[in-house]
Length: 366
Ligand code: ADP
Ligand code: MG
Image (cartoon, rainbow, N blue to C red):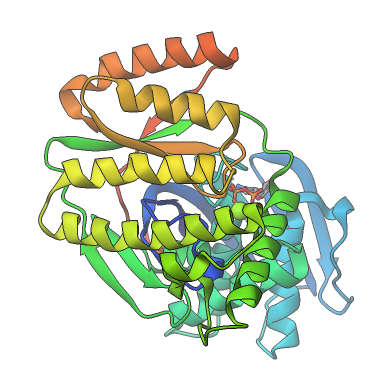
């Protein structure tokens, strides 16, 4: 018997690069994502296929599993299988076929979707009440240790715990979370894809993490803070190195913006939230330096267009996607103008998607 499962992509509404700094983030799961079918096999093998990749892979469950770049995309599910076995979970022989309507490598967390989907699907064969925050943390560890990307918990948490029409306010150091109703009224959340390949992403990501670790180390010589996101503006004044100080300033100001955003959303004040989105983008551009020409062109042009309350990059940056809040009546002209202006500035054709905010990982029952 074949079963089908779904894990969504996610956008982070605000609170960028705060997860690995122990801060507050505000992601939301999307209605676009990755699906997979699970079919049990009678032998001892796992076969991995994807409709979006020609490479496929087969492993024997009794063989050791290690990361190997030759395994291409299958490293993500292999990392999950490896860790499940290591922690003593039953992993059934099976064939898994992934399919997706989520752009890959665009900052919408397709990697987290594949990880969470694989873990949820495999565990569902033997366990009924899967603890989703635990599952998110498990998948994050796989991305950190097996894949080698030092991401925080946000992506996997949003993919696992998403709730339709709600953002998730998540404290990344304690995993305390609450849902914030995201009432769009006459506005829509648009996803703007730069279509720029993100070649630098993994190394730059790890570089920013190291810079933030250094900022925290400096602050801890005079204070007892545990995470950089707890620092105040006056505290970061002691940092001498201009680059490290800028990185810390982004973390501190972005943390304040998340709190203000939640307040604004609770009052259904989308205009204020839009202004905070714009300020977040500026901070990611000037202080954190993770945007790049394409994301700047897309977000900044969007900010100027009629009917747009705010726009910012989302995800790790260096290409990938931005998000914009746009009045529904203005969407056709917004799409037309933005495509034209972005093409003129960068020579690239952007893609623009309208997505709703959807639920987290689940089985799709026919
Ligand atoms: P993001 O998570 O922002 O989409 P990443 O670079 O972290 O970007 O992850 C993208 C990678 O995840 C892809 O290059 C591929 O290896 C894997 N991936 C994502 N979706 C799928 C899919 N549907 N099938 C197979 N692999 C996928
Ligand atoms: Mg990813």
